[in-house]
Length: 134
Image: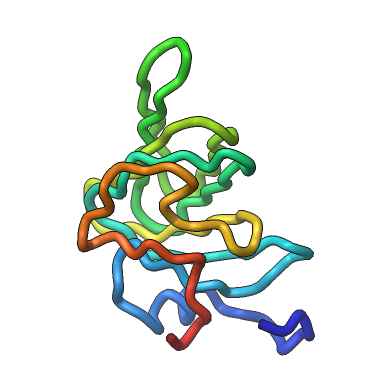
């Protein structure tokens, strides 16, 4: 993906360009980071990103993120418009009780299922992100 400006990317149109769940599309890059959007529903998979934090912004709907931390397990609930960063090395599992849309910000090449993960179910795309239109 080129870093040359092509003009604004309307997120509603980017989201309308694909239907797959848990299969992020890269809308732009910032330095060495991807800005990805995804449609989500149901459960993702427990996973860990050992070397990077993971930023979430809820564009539509609601996202829950379960976290396994030293003090125990907890779940954060992100309503539309909320942001949350999962710290590197924290095992987590996103879940959307109904259809939602999210934006993620993470280093280019970061796998959606992290460095360590549970078995990946068929509805989760283990990817480093797809270009828009693919």
